[in-house]
Image (cartoon, rainbow, N blue to C red):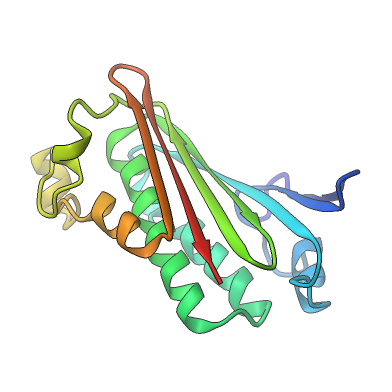
Length: 177
């Protein structure tokens, strides 16, 4: 935890977080304790390695912790945690690697998940509950039930997906407070 972590206030009055996971004592945690959700925008990202199931859920758990420490409403945190977890797992299941970025403002959170994966051939089909292209070895671990994209959409106020076969997929979710 805490690899290459840092917090920077840029010219647009935005905090930029540059780490995979920030540990106790990080600058981010001190910003959170000062009550950050007033008039600033905060950005951060998590780098996800495809197939690394030993770290499954770390990014979504860290984002959930950030929001809870900031005193954000439980229902908002629940929706963010579910949507982020599903995006994180899709990267782990289907892609070589990806990045999960977030932008927090007082009104909403924007989550962007971009991966370097195979892309989605039929987005409409992939959005159906229970439809999955996960390989058997992933299903044997209890993942790949075909609820990832539907759960992301269900928990987001705005949901966008763009995919290019052979290049990867980008999902953008906006969840309003």
